[in-house]
Image (cartoon, rainbow, N blue to C red; front, side, top):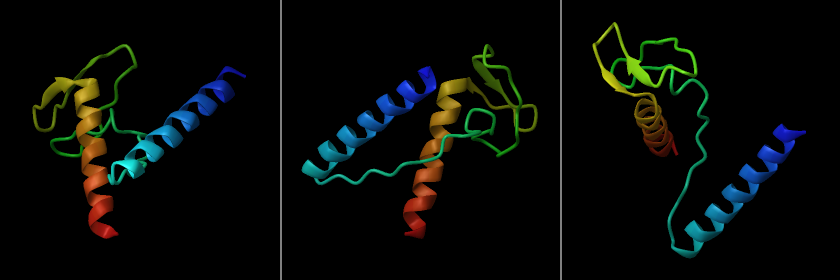
Length: 86
């Protein structure tokens, strides 16, 4: 039940964001965030970590970032890649 409420809340947020973006003549894209905190934004290696681990440390390339910043960089890259393919 709480998941359904959370999904409904997210849907309302996305709809509001789309409306505001349209009124400002700004384009938004929905990006699937799955795996973005596990994927290294530096070298694309998969770095498994528990949810409690807040720091991303890649043993492949040595990148060290906050987990959320790493995920944000991956989401940005996915959005830019999607934008180029449209």
